[in-house]
Length: 269
Image (cartoon, rainbow, N blue to C red; front, side, top):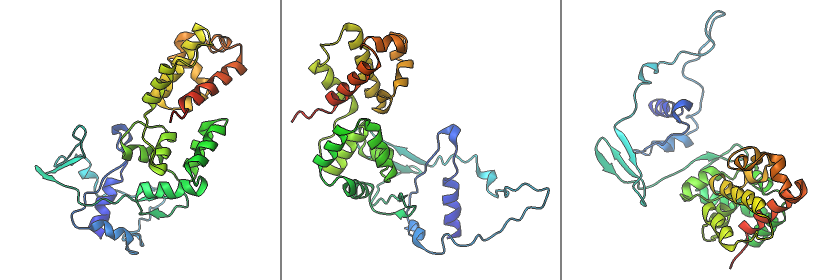
């Protein structure tokens, strides 16, 4: 167990400059079952008590190993296929996978991310119609997204598992309510094809098209933020005051954004 703790401890070292914020344990001996052992997080084997002039941070006995890049383990995600692992030149298969994470109550969750998401979301939205109604009626969709996160729904991890560039709405519809996945880019292009903004002038339509592009690239949150008018591609079209004037003022601009959102999530079937 001590050796396993050292291995996990090495994995949990964050290296922000290198983008290393997570790690994967490749378990050949079911060592991860030790996580459930009550002795795993017991008292520390060595207690460091610094003196008055000593560094309060305990010395790390493994500092000499920090240059090890773990080059004998390769992870190669082939196009359109599942991840392929190569360890010391030998290809291996994943026979079982277990993902553990902490829920909103701070307890370790061992059920699948999909099952946990379904259970959590359905506590608040029992049916797809319930979710769609709340989404449609919400003045700010970002508020529902924030609610989901507060309830412990791990949207980023869920998006990575699904493997598609879906926004929060489509992640929930797809994973929880078994709806076909629609990417952000597909939703934006569907709105463009329907040409739903013909009542606006050319300048206003250019603003709405730029907002669609922002949504396709980054999601809904920046679209609902007035600050988006200060960044590209919107800033290339004029100042925030100029852009809002194309809609007759702030109220008209906000109404147009709501109309854009309605068009994005319009049910076509």
